[in-house]
Length: 114
Length: 114
DNA sequence: TTATTGTATTTGTCTATACTAATATACTGT
DNA sequence: ACAGTATATTAGTATAGACAAATACAATAA
Figure 1 (cartoon, protein in one colour):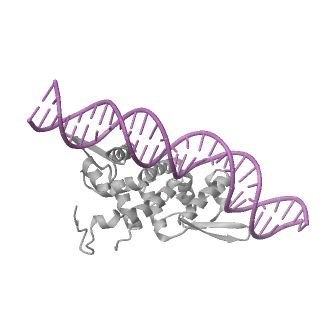
Figure 2: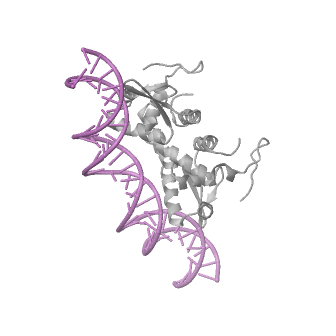
Figure 3: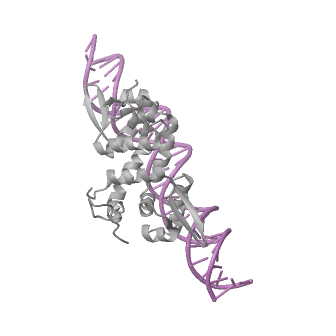
C-alpha cells in the first residue's frame, strides 16, 4: 500500500486520487445518474446544446412524464442545469467536467469509427 | 436531425456516435456496473494491477461474500477478468478501454490536484 | 375568464439491487 | 483422509429504482 509516484509534475499517491470515500461517493452518485439508458440518451441529445423538454421528448422517445422524471434526477444530481423561458424549460449539461466525461464515454463505448 | 461534422478527420454525425440504441445500451450496462461505490472502489484498488480477492477484501472493507458478489457482477459484465492460481483468484481490469475510462473518471471526479 | 400548451409532481405498483448469514466448492498442507 | 484457507453461491429480506396514470402548476392565447 504505497505511494506510487505518477510523474514528475505531482507526487500524490494513487490512494489519494480516488480511494478517498468522498470522491468515490461523488463519482458513484454521478455515474449512477448517468447510467440509465434514457438518461444517457438525454445527455447525448443535449450534447453541448440547450434543448427544450418537448424537443427532448421527441428525440428520446418516451412519455413526457417519464422524461420529466429523468430530467429531475439529472438536475438534482447536478448533472443538468435548466432555464425557463416563457412557456418552456431548456436544459443543458451543467458543467464542463461532465461534458468532458460524456465525450470521453463516447470515445470508449461507441462503435463509430474514430 | 442533421449531420454535424465534427472535424476534418471524420464525417459521421453526432447521432451516429452515441444515439444508436446499441451503443447506448452497452454504455449503460457498463456504467451501471461501475457506478456502485464498492465496485468503483474495487476498480480503484485494482488499477492496472492484478489483485487477489483476499487483498481486495482487505482494501475495500466489506464482507468476503459481498466482495465476491460485486466481483461477479463486474466479471459478468466484462469489466474484469480473472485468473486462478492455486488457492487464490486474481482479478484485473479486463480491457484497455475500461482502464482508460477509469483514469478519465479520476480526472473528472477527483479533488486531488492535477 | 376559460381553454390550451408545456412541464412538473404524486401515487401506486412492479422489478431490480444490495446486503447478510449460511452453506457449498476448490485447493493446500499434514 | 482430514483440517484449514480462499472463493463462490444461495436464500431471505430490505431498500431503491422505473414506469404509467392521473393531477397539478405555469404561462400563453383567445
